[in-house]
Length: 161
Figure 1: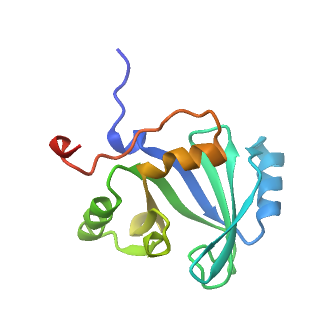
Figure 2 (figure 1 turned 120 degrees about the vertical axis):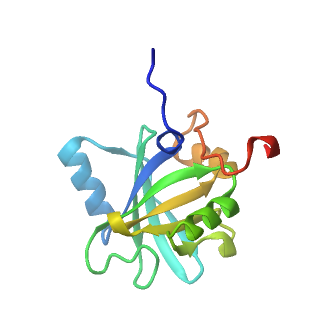
C-alpha cells in the first residue's frame, strides 16, 4: 500500500535562498552537487530590483534570489535560507490562517500584483511562502515547461471549491 502524503508535504514545491551573488551560488551548487538551472530572470517588486533562478528539473525546486539592500531578499550580511514554498488554493485565507496561528506576515507581493506572501516561522529562522495556485500555469511556462500541475494546500472548505 503506498504511503499517504500529508497535505503540507504534497503542496511543498521549492526551497528558497537569499544570496548576494546569484552567479556564484548557481556555479557552486552546480559544481558541488550537479544542480542544473533554468536561465535567471530579473524582476522588480515595489522599489526593489532582484534576480532569481529555479533549478531544473523539479519539483521540488531550488530557488535562488539576489535582492538589493532593504529588499525582502537582502543578503548583504551573507547568504541565508529564506523560505519554503507552498502552493495554496486561497492565498488570502492561507495568509490569515498563518497570521492568526502565530506566523506573522513578513512581506506580501499582493499589493504589487504578485500572488505570494511570506510568513515567518520562528523555530526555523525563515519563512513559509504561500503562492496562489492560480499562478501555477505561468510558473510552469517560465520555469518548468511541460511540467504537470502540482498540488496545493486546501484553505477553503471542500464545499466552496
